[in-house]
Image 1: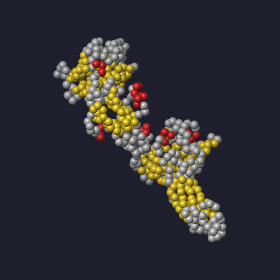
Image 2: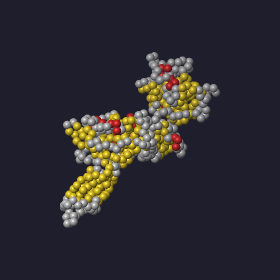
Image 3: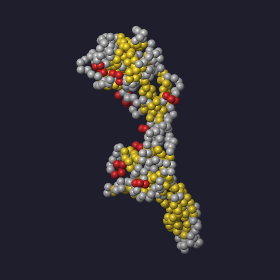
Length: 546
């Protein structure tokens, strides 16, 4: 019997290597012996593999993975007498370290199914044909063992022979857009050069040793249960000639990957690092910049960020919000670069505690990065001072009043506006069209509703949500807000400004409102550029009703 029979599996070459000590016949001869090698798998009975002589090693290409191989080696002399068989086993694992098949849980309304699998490194299938190409193809078979389909090529559009046995997948491709196919073509070269390249998975998805692939079918078409499973056929690039690209079978994954009703656990993103805080006194916005997080099983461009901030030392778990998406000024873009950023509206003279965390597409959260910032106290823009509102000159009519630089104190020759936001800060980067209706110019915000004489309405009839200054005074041919909402009762050089407060606008609706000492306003300043009023400044110091 051959002694010291050993087996090793080389995943890089997909070779099982056998070795044993030389046997002797009854005369002590070794060179006249033949060795008969058989093998069985956990899915197939024992069968003959090879007969070798004058050697005590043998290499066997394992084209089935995810199973155990058992090898039998016996010696046979020249007279036909056989020894007892030496037996050994080796586990040939799948290059897919984990594979999950489940319904998409990233949204309660999603109808998608997902394949979610991991591997040690890319390309995870061996280059068994030694041609140096990393191009690979996967085919997913439903409720059956992957068949021995020897070749996928240009002629059959790189598809398996029996499409009814395979599950289609949907994925982004190198040439742009998305593809739905019954084969997943993995990148060797990634481009739009024709052939397999036109349907190759976009290489940007190979950021981690993990792939999340959507199925082409949805819950509208089929409902999978725990009894359903998939197996995987694996193909490697073989050759390209005469316009025909050929991929040949490299491995059949015999593991049955069963459907599950819950998603597997995923790794959380790393904590955002290096928070930097800076304050813009003109806009009253605090800019927060950080080094972006990474994630080992989520594409980094799918990571989102949440922020929690308060003037208290305690941050409530219920106060997390998505980090606002705020435009950078042109001068800021180069400074921020590719880092993450957001801006929040803050009140002068107040210290804020701030926390930031990253979230992946499955809702897994990073640890929080924290910081604090003492916002400096500032004066209002445009020489504005002595802002007050309440029953200033009457016990029945509320008013708002302030002093400012001589009119026109914001800008000369350009229609401008002030809005008084009720119990909130001015929304960052807010803008509105000159063609808005007067009562909708504040969007989804709460603002004071004011009354004054305008170009469009006389005798203090007009009631609008902002003080509109048309510095040329009621020009003929003006249209939109700069006509109907422009104050006509202002004088050049005027330094005191007052208007009636007649209620509020709430998301474009006119609401009666009974003001109290708990109510405050903040100021947003806007200037017309083309046909759009854009924010040019903000003052967020809370001014309380009196």
